[in-house]
Length: 184
Image (cartoon, rainbow, N blue to C red):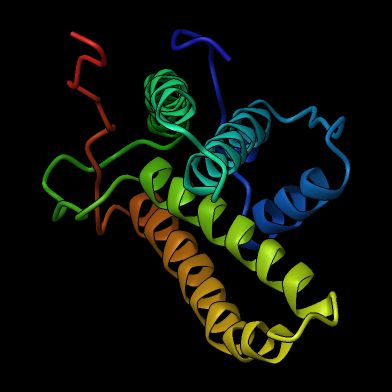
């Protein structure tokens, strides 16, 4: 979705819907959505997943200095792209919901929260896989799942609450703008 495209309140998904879309996309890389905001959220997930994998490669025991440097450069490119996606998601939400200028300001924008949600879903997916592999430390990974699931429920609830409060005019947000210049 381009920053100038129109959006409607009906395009805004619930946290639960977004998590379901994220989980589907993690298991089916070709998964797409016909809803513009959800499509950009899936782009955000894929960017974070690619960054996760690059960070794993850079931390791998066989990663030499040139490999770490190239991974870092790729991560910087992904971060620049990820910030653009976050800006576009916030712009779409801002267009979809009329904000009350006098409402108290939220500490983060919905897209920044969705960004954190995507990383949490990736973390849960990796933890579930490690817990299910039957490795010697599988129990250690399994023990991490209940707190991760609680964090997921809490974050979904917080995102839904933020969007509901913005709709109700009891809270507002400033659309995220990244001002960092990567590689400059």
